[in-house]
Length: 567
Image 1 (cartoon, rainbow, N blue to C red):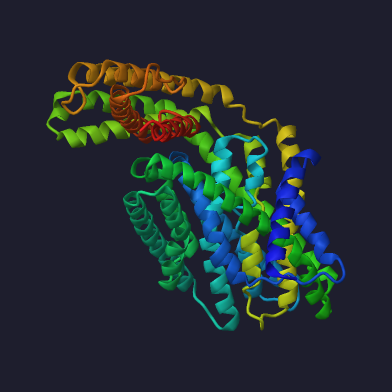
Image 2: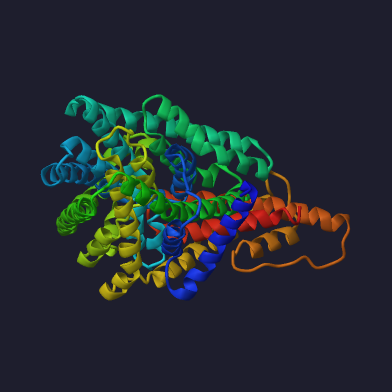
């Protein structure tokens, strides 16, 4: 069939299933996987063969970049220790555990082959975690799951590379450690450089369409050199995305940010949906390969059970450790209060005045940030029910699909290993993903933070209004950049700066009206600049939730974009 027709049909199928999903009460990714499985088992359907490198190097970079750009850097920082443990400790322990059990229980497979399978199965998937967002769990849980999925690929792929090398010869634990450190360090450096440079280049491009076009290649600019230099291309992509998301609020124009949101949401939808459908379509050909090798269904079932059980038990053990550590930390907060108060008093003392203004400012910002973090941990703690969801929500997806197919063709019992990996991934999606919403309702962990976020949005809106009034008073009294401004322009800028109303000019058109509009636009931009700078400072302090700050920053972007209609 012509490729164009196939592409059109594929997009229509993706859209149709996504529209149908809410009506049948099933998450769209699950329907896509199920549809793919059914299609692949129909006799005569063409085999869906996709080079795994296309998934690893062509599909995952833009998907991870889109997720990283939208990841709140504040929330990511607060739970970085837990995310790092999920991304490294859980992956390593899961892979080694599966390797040991496979070598013990499955004849013909050694520890290296078992560890390779464990490395393939251990990473959760950023695409699969999109299912979690639909269940209404706490934003903190979503941050943990998405942060884990963004970073655990590096650990898994390094382990897989080492396990494959061990099958062919020997590899030392030191070599594995050096390989991992190199992969992370190289990736972080390249990600930071690419993220910063891409923002600088896009800021120089006046056209929002061209700036968006540049953003499309940023993931690949980060991925390719990192892989060539021995780093993790996927981690480099994530770092570049985090840098872009955090600094883009300041360095990019409003039209660039809004255009990027629309364009990348479309790309993410198409790629995510295609990955789920592809997972299902791959099942039929894998079953055929397994049968051609006269594979044992019993051995397949044993590997699947070993994989699922090991992944769940290791994850549960780590979740328990996280909850225990958090409980101890929360108990220590009262003891920290006196130390915080003493430090605050010191900053106001004559001794602190001997420090430079810059050091005092940084120390005060650090104090505010630390207090905000403690308040966050106290107000949004993780309980046993959250831990249960954290364990059950660890689903596998595209990374497992691609990594399994990178196993060398001469690997012992390769069809068995590949099919078992796919079976674990598909079952985790269908069983865990299909029951996740029910589990969340059953445990009662739906996070109704709408009131809290609404209150914070109202507080931030009031603060922005006060700031706008102050700036407009200054402009009315002193002018803007030394130039007097028409009172009507200042009044309109004051009204528009409330962020919750819009007005229109009244009166006849003419040169005088045009001058007023131009003056209004200049005042309005000055106010918006002050408001954005203040929100960025508030974001750095951590005093408000990311959701509330995102809402206000989006309002500012829309207001700035609206200015183009009057200029």
